[in-house]
Image 1 (cartoon, rainbow, N blue to C red):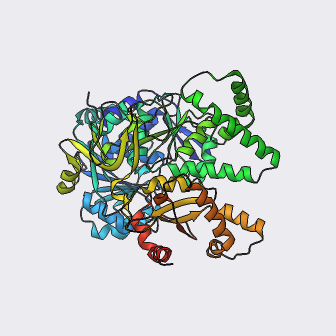
Image 2: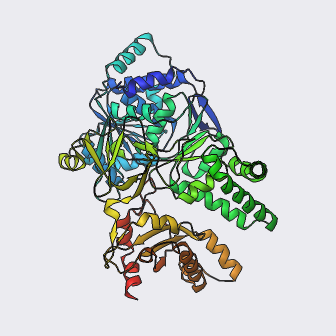
Image 3: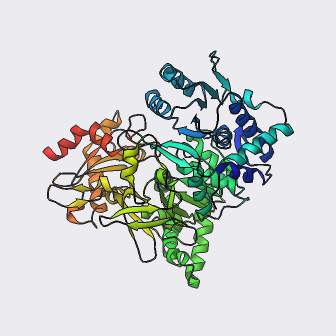
Length: 590
């Protein structure tokens, strides 16, 4: 049965939880109950209506993850208004395009910094009428107010409740709920139009066992459809949703909140793994020996646990000892009561999934796109197959085209791209969405994603190369943080490598190497030799034409600011190639 986000919110507050939300106030996490959550949403909803913002209009959200985001978003969708979430990391000029293109009438912004970006573009936005800030700001513009002023402290009257409930009932499943601009690894962002039915079908059919007893930590950008849909699912199932103070405090906040469910991206898990391995490398020899013994036991137990088969007695005893002495302490760093992680936005390296599972941390790798609201397929706890993105969720069909492209059909498919009928027609053909991803379905119905169709390289020798599997293999090197493989129309694959700088700095100190900058560090012959050996070993199992023959060490990481990665940590390959064109040419000219 088709549903709406408006009625989902009504269901959310029916749980009457004392801690529907958790937010950091005055140095500690404090709850916001369902009743107060409802009051704040209703007041914001009615304030929008009072100034003439009506169903079908657009309101934008420019903010980090915080309780005000959830309040504003539910106020918007319960009124039948279309929300336009925007990444807070975007530059002012990028925001201008999206606000102008969407014709947003009101923008909710988090703080002074975001407001300043908006104010710089406002003269060029004739449709924009007002802004609502979450923080108190220094601004005398009469078009700007605060969310606190809209919400107030007074209880709701019966008339206000009735007016709100009537509006909730009036929202229809086929109404436009959101225009989400793709972060895009190339080209101009496209506005993906998602209806209430698109999003609610994904929440209803995702297959995850979410419970009212769960505490879910929301730290990926809510401007991305994955975290937003995850939060909708948390709320709908009565879970408590907690937000970080900032992205820099995520690790500390995890230990404070002690969540049971978290959505992450591969880069998040890579960093956790790297920190663990660095800590072990500097630990006393007995502790190192215990850790590696425990990991060996965990890997030995892995197939039994995956298949839910009893372990042999001796292995079971060793696993219990390893868990008590090592694994439990690792899990404590993540709060100690995690039921499972979900990983999305980019492929998760198989060795990472296996490592975390070996220590008792389940990561369910999922696959989706903004255009599919977002979930297409997922692994679920108790039905994991590493190296795949799981089985298609209920009511969603997947098939593989003759050229290997993944095609998707279901109630989660977008209405189309906003003001872009040509690209819509190219993307949805005969009811099937052409994802642009190359993949395969195995005998068990599990989907594997090999690479992006447009990212497949053809070497000058005529060999086709998928860069992502090679990049994931390179990231198994102890000294590699990120890798971008180059091969299109080239004689052989090369790579731009962002190293694990902390590890290299420790290595340099141990070797007595002197350097005054990371540029000097990455130019040291000893450092290059170290990476050369690690890369050689990582590529040993590849076909000869897939092996990285040359590499360049970069002195800085890729950044959102420089346009090299998206806010969800996906590499903008073309932008990286443009920025480092000289370094790339040098690898092929020497």
